[in-house]
Amino acid sequence: MPKAIKRERPKEKFSYDPKKVLSKLEEYGRSVLEAIKAGKNPYFDIPTRGLNNVYFDEKSRLIKMGDKLSRRYFLNVAHARKFMQTLLIMAYVKRLVAEGKHASLREAYYANKHTIPGTKENTFEDQRESDPIIEDLERMLGVLREEMHITADRRGYIYGDIVIRDGEDEFNASKLGSGGWAVPGTVEHIQFPEINVDYALVVETAAMADRLIEEKFPKKEKALIIATQGQASRGVRRLIHRLHYEEGLPIIVFTDGDPYGWYIYSTIKQGSINLAYLSDKLATPEARFVGMTMDDIKRYGLENVTEKLKGIPPNKKGGPTGDYKRILEEMEYPWFQNKEWQRQLKMALKWGVRIEQQALANKSLEFVAKEYLPEKINNGDLLP
Image (tube, rainbow, N blue to C red; front, side):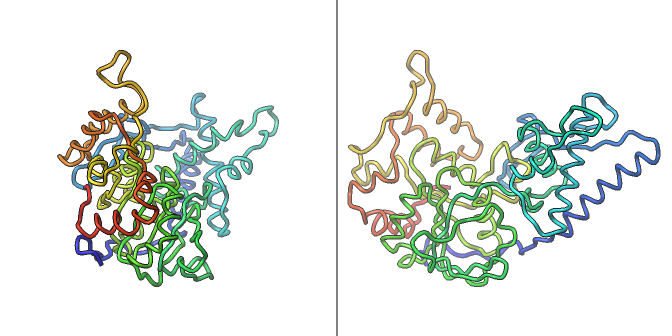
């Protein structure tokens, strides 16, 4: 195991319990029924979305949702449709969880779309109506939509010496061919009976993950490769969180050296504004960043394989736009206020360049696996 990293004691326990979800749903159902019986106007209190109800918690180092609530009434012309939709989705989720079945977001939309008897009005006209209701339920119940058995398309895969138990199946993620194990939309039921790796390396691009697998990096360095294939999906972020907090695995992130790659890291580490209400289940504040960095450009002689930042610089007419604007925004993030990150972001602005993971192939195909990553990780050359 590299001296700079060490496996930690687990801080959370595997805790998936569908009975808790059912209990919360039934509690809401009873409150509506009791209000109707008492001749009162039923309502739901829903945590408010938006920037004005999101903050960065310095202690937990997470983007969190505030305590502002909006009240949705049944006997209110402006609220009645959404109130009805909320109850429909609640009932649907209850059936899914009780029967042990899963549905995609699209299936949830179609399963609940029908014409209301005696009217020409549909319960849902578009999936853009049902998706926000499911998000409302997440905030109301304090659970992931995956715990409600509603999933999205799978994206991302893992490769390394880790045994996975998925229902009645048990397998090693290093013995499924070079493609590894595709991360499903929901990972709540997944368990890890055996882990023979020292850390997890989260890789932005599938091409780089494939390169590392071909060079046998996971075996030589005792690493678990987690390929996000771009912005990490909820399933991948939840998997990363669980591997760290339930299994004590250190998390190291490897992305392109550009504002998009740094945002991927930011989302994995601190969470996102859109999903602030799930940060404590999706984010991993202890994650660290190995590259690509601006320092890598000079250290490894990559000056001739950089790419220009897209957009207009702040000192030019019409600027800042594109990458420049994004970098300036990232410089304001509370979690990027440390000296190390401010230095990297300022260098990117000053030089007007970005550096991709694949640029390391300029040295040699095996350079990233044999020199770049082992050297930086073993020396603890990681950004916070």
